[in-house]
Image (cartoon, rainbow over the protein chains, first blue to last red):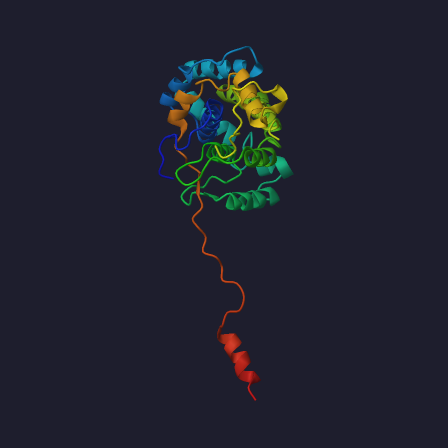
Length: 206
Length: 79
């Protein structure tokens, strides 16, 4: 893709604009450890109103971003998600959906992506069922881009229920419960609360 | 949005008549998900690294195709 920022290709409601932004942020945080500019940007982000678990999870992530050292975040990301042989916390949906990587869920997901006109970039090694890639797919479905309109909410919901909410909660629990997790405990908590919110919101359509 | 309701929800309509999408958006807004919270952070986050538009696949040609073994077969059927 040529886009270097989430440019507004199609008019979105503020709520869907926000959803796309949250998925973009999660995609980035799970692709790699945050660098200093990203930590600063999160630390400076506006709070979310209210006292919901979602609002509190956001403020926890914002606060953690303000005190986290880049080197420590990088080490933590590596230790948690990039094990030699077996990572502490596996971020691939297939692992959680069947207990092993590269089984049917990945093949089904590739078929689903093909049907949606989406593919993995040829120059990346990350698998399509990696949490980062799945969040990026949601962002693309919600916001569209130069070549596609925003997807119907029913399309978003079907993808979300099959490939995200079906497995992500135990993964987030594993993240939060892992002794190595510090910054990523906050990322995991925010992920859990945000996905729960979007699950409930998507379930309202039709 | 392709699923925008064409109802004008600013008119006095009963709550029950509002589209599901309006309910969904109001729900999100009530939890602050309409706020600018992630906007500034996501601006740095959004370098799509993984997914792209799939190129338009050439339709695989279906049905009969002449090939060497087919020609050979037909050659053997000539009386």
